[in-house]
Image (cartoon, rainbow, N blue to C red):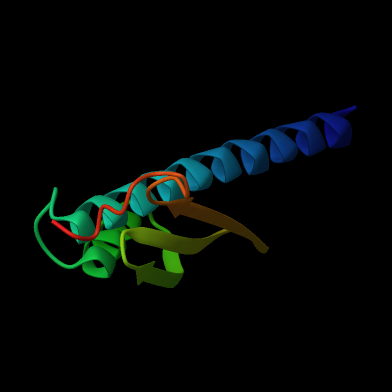
Length: 100
């Protein structure tokens, strides 16, 4: 019984950390796109690194093309490694927002 309970608690912790990491990746991608568009000051990937560092995770990749950003993060939970990916930018059907 104790082993099963420990397993459930471990699985719950893994799920919680994974959900939190995905939220950080989503926020980082949005902030990178907003930084690139000029809505937020600074360098897009520098902003991502600061945000992710506060969440005790690492940036695997930060790629920004035009107003689109793609972010990959990782963190560890004991011996387990968790990954999250996020993408942000204008819709493909949106008008050209790069020419102001």
